[in-house]
Image (cartoon, rainbow, N blue to C red):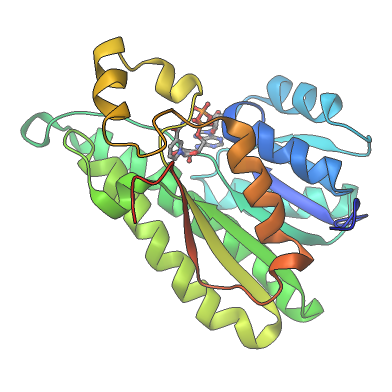
Length: 247
Ligand code: NAI
């Protein structure tokens, strides 16, 4: 692999100030991309961007669920960094509850951030990508979107929705040279999984053939590959990075 295969390309990473998003932002910066780190918190986004390797990155505050903020943010990114070549829709939240207790807001908030957020950003960057006949969109879904999970009807529905979004965008934009794929991570060690109890983790390990939780760098390396030239003939795919949970 060319050490700087994304040299000079502008990449948006939503939810890029921590966790999996931050690791992806670092991997793309390492590959030579200029990264726009998107987060709800301006300070966190700006600080994370400043800490990325190689320099030339920037942080932008934006709630991915708000279409007007997303369009304004894409405009600001293009003015500051240049035309967007790569979009990673990584921002996501959980609001877990059993079905009979789940509140409307818990369902709606998760769909708005996880699914509508990816739609908002994809729609906003795709016009320019189509015009330039180049671009790569990567959605971060979840094994839960493929398998379902008790207590996560909202989250699993949002992640399954991303699978349909990924394949539809891939089919719609392929003739314009734009690719769209997704990674379905299994259980990865981040703030999101820090909430799991020891006995929950123990239970999970029995379902993971490789026998451990994953690390953020194991998602980031796959993301770097999927958005880059080495994956130039891959589109519409959902790649599980999950220690073998889903086969
Ligand atoms: P995290 O909670 O550490 O980070 C999520 C990031 O998204 C945060 O920076 C947060 O501020 C941002 N975000 C959330 N809602 C937002 C909004 N409306 N607008 C802008 N930014 C927003 O989570 P983690 O674990 O790094 O997860 C990243 C992605 O990977 C999520 O989509 C998650 O669903 C997915 N995932 C995580 C797994 C895990 O085991 N940690 C497993 C499978 C999928």
